Length: 384
Ligand code: NDP
Ligand code: MN
Image 1: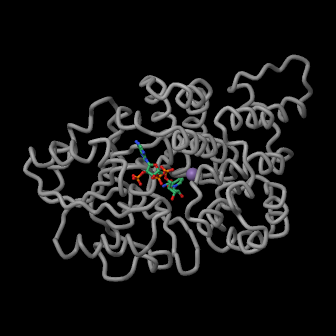
Image 2 (image 1 turned 90 degrees about the vertical axis):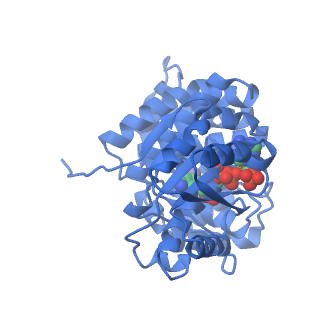
Image 3 (image 1 turned 180 degrees about the horizontal axis):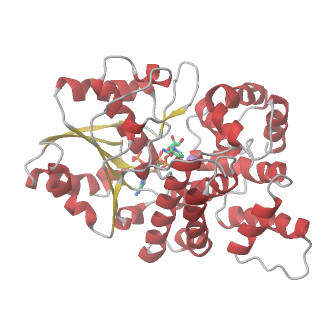
């Protein structure tokens, strides 16, 4: 048997209304906090206001950095890190979806050093400011893992990175914050969870621990992915999706992602207006077909977890039924789309295929079926 090590130090708090406890939790780390958030959702819903209140009640001095865009850029991260350094801030609190949370971890690293955050792709980071994540989408799982994804707008590269010092200290998962997600955000972020579980479960680096997280996440997804989209006020469904998202985040922390993510990053890197989950939606069915042979038994097992009846189907038919089911899920989420629908230009496909290897090579390596640039380009064309 292969040797393996598993490590995840994030203290996870789950429950409705828990954001009100942030002050108490944060006080352990510092009297000053940089809140990293997006431009509008957390302000409009009053969530940022509630966070500021609990911090102030606990005697913590907050500074707000609210310029993080979806698909965050290195300029935003370096600017916020500069503010943290200048103000000698002792704690970073990420508030929002994957974009602010990923940024909070990158900012925590960059604030400790004196080099641009981009350089940390090559220079391993040994220390970071403590980070608390408060997640508003279900989602990336960023709240519980060490990864950060950032875009270099000059080159359109969108790599991910993650060092041990980047694990959040604590994650606050309060499903009430997720009730305000508009349908498109619910659908795209929810589908991101599906792809995380799928890729962690089938990837070469999977092990007993990541698979255990995936199993429970599959059950939660089966009953709650479409429900949370159709019934946005259903707190039970929102809570279950939040749990599925965190489980998936833990799973990819152990065993990484695969070709769907490897290709999606350059898609939304070149087209920053494309939501990560929408890019995934366009690429998933063709990527599943590509992996079908290498993962037949896994597909059958996932089909079983998704409640697909075996009833006389051959192994090939049963495994293939999972791909059909995925198409149905995408249709129910109104995400039955191709890259063309997302505004991707055909002439860009070759550049995107190349970048899957240069920025996300580890994810291609982890994919169950071997793939070279030619195969990736074919996949992009089939997903157009
Ligand atoms: P974002 O954080 O980009 O948020 C998407 C949009 O939803 C924004 O416009 C945001 O508004 C809005 N929004 C977020 N939460 C709410 C809410 N509760 N109510 C209303 N509106 C809301 O989305 P994701 O969570 O999908 O994060 C995507 C990023 O994470 C990508 O860069 C992706 O590559 C990365 N990622 C990271 C992973 C990891 O393991 N760390 C894994 C997979 C992806 P506003 O901007 O105003 O806040
Ligand atoms: Mn993802």
